[in-house]
Amino acid sequence: MNSPTSLTVETLTGAAIVPHLPALARLRITVFREFPYLYDGDEAYEERYLRTYVEAPLAAVVIARDGAEIVGASTCLPLSAETENVTAPFRARGLDLSRFFYFGESVLLKAYRGRGIGVAFFEHREAQARRAGADYATFCAVIRAPDDPRRPPDYVPLDAFWRHRGYTHYPDFVCTMRWKEVGAAEETDHRLSFWMKSLSGAPLP
Ligand SMILES: CC(C)(COP(=O)(O)OP(=O)(O)OC[C@H]1O[C@@H](n2cnc3c(N)ncnc32)[C@H](O)[C@@H]1OP(=O)(O)O)[C@@H](O)C(=O)NCCC(=O)NCCS
Image (tube, rainbow, N blue to C red):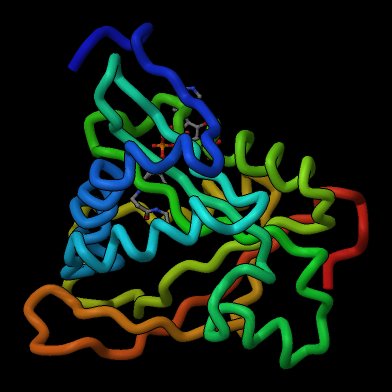
């Protein structure tokens, strides 16, 4: 690890993301393998998934670098560009998708946590959402039972971190995603609940 002064955080859009796709894929696989996601990822799927952020207008990837090495990344795009499983709870409630900006994920190598990069990821993505004219930022997180036996003893949930960023939890606002968990034979459904913040002062739904 280089000295902390060599850490940089930058928002990339469109073609500027392309050279970083393999590094981003590896980072997602490494970080999401841990609890609570327990994702047994594959790089070919990851690179296809990340192409969405190259192609969708107004989408962005925020990258954290230590010198030249990518050590963290965070994604965002207009909710209307997301897949149907993600937009389903919004459509079910008759909400206008064009008012929402969706934050895909934040992944940061363990050695770099607790130094403000996660906060910077939110600031950069909220700036992108505001540039896009969105009223709300939203993201979802996997639901795990508090007594899940796979939960490491030192695991700290991110709920307080998200509340401090101004997000409100909607525990009943749920979507489903499929992925293969570590140790599983095939993909299964996973439930994720949403968090939201008003960026424009518009009342939360
Ligand atoms: C989510 C994640 C990116 C957060 O990253 P992080 O860089 O450790 O977070 P930060 O350091 O910015 O913030 C964490 C806390 O430390 C504080 N902090 C510690 N050192 C800091 C510093 N030098 N400067 C600013 N804040 C600092 C922050 O204020 C924040 O506290 P708060 O919530 O009370 O305000 C990281 O935990 C991660 O990759 N987790 C695994 C993947 C995951 O679950 N992602 C989320 C779902 S997609």
